[in-house]
Image (cartoon, rainbow over all chains, first blue to last red; front, side, top):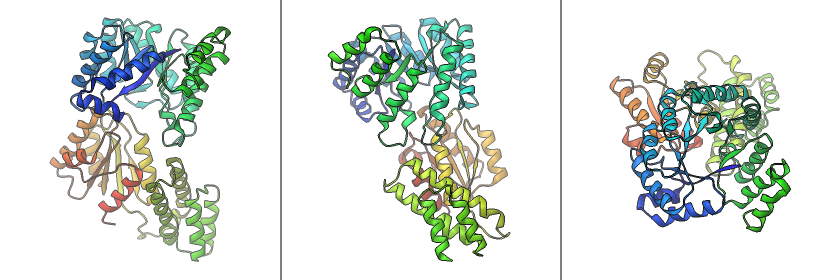
Length: 264
Length: 212
């Protein structure tokens, strides 16, 4: 399971304030606890800084790279921001994200190919976001095709079927889950990834819903996730689901996480 | 008579989606004016729901279930309205600005505005300026609601408000804006008529913009 650690995002107040005031300590701490918890990539996002996103994200990238050696996940919808960050990252990054919208596809894919970066691809086009499982799967195929044309192999692509709040549409999670299974079956080399927080929007005990969704997704073959690895209940549900699904031989990883007190 | 209206009101507040149509039919059969069923039953119920939400007593899905009950009831009684009855508080044109595909929040606001008695016309997402201008001129809405979720599409919101003003389309139309990155300050900066922090605030704001 590939883990993209999500905590360094300026939509969190503590991060926004740290970036605003240049508080290196907060960012360093966030990078370190996520790396220690088992992150494969550290997501960095400065999206709330209107007109200053690139400048702020550069600062975050430098601080994180000073602290940990694991690669970064460059999180921005803006091709100019991604183009500005790619030259300063030390380890080959994951780009978050492209969609089928030409403004993002045609600009970001060549950059990813140049830098040998892996890419998160959202099931979203100029006509909107894919809602049904069929739409999501169709867009996944299109994304893979576009990426291959740009010289990016299937194995470097992480398709996010996008999950919407079950609060507004009771079938939205099922649509995403069915798409995960169909993508895995139809395009075996491509990865599936998903953010977990959307699903629980506007519902109480959101984390419980998020965990449950993650387990259901792992059952459907999800192999990567954007999450908070320091959340022991979430991390525990993930490790348990992997063990139950036969993806953790002799439960060794589950036991290791237990000993390290990383699950609850 | 008022008892039947109270029952309808209570059913909407309590999200009785399966019972509401029967209750509205009972009221119609008892000879209650359709316009009263709407104003004293359905819309008053949604006022209560809006207050409950604003006070954090209920969650969004509960609010949406009430809005659905309200809509079911409304569909039952609407065909019986006489011409000249004015059941709508006004027409709201809604859309997500160009470059932005996000519509969850906007759709919640749509449902709540409909629940409150507005007529809502939804233009969807990724709305070009040309399309927006065309629809404003065609529809002549009382209110335009613009939504954005991405910070990079906020300038599109500013551009839309500016252009609508330059075209002289703001004389009979108010503009309200919303979405996660939209703040009161930003709304003021770009010259919008108002900003709602959530769906309940958007409804209160729309009523205020209509002078109600």
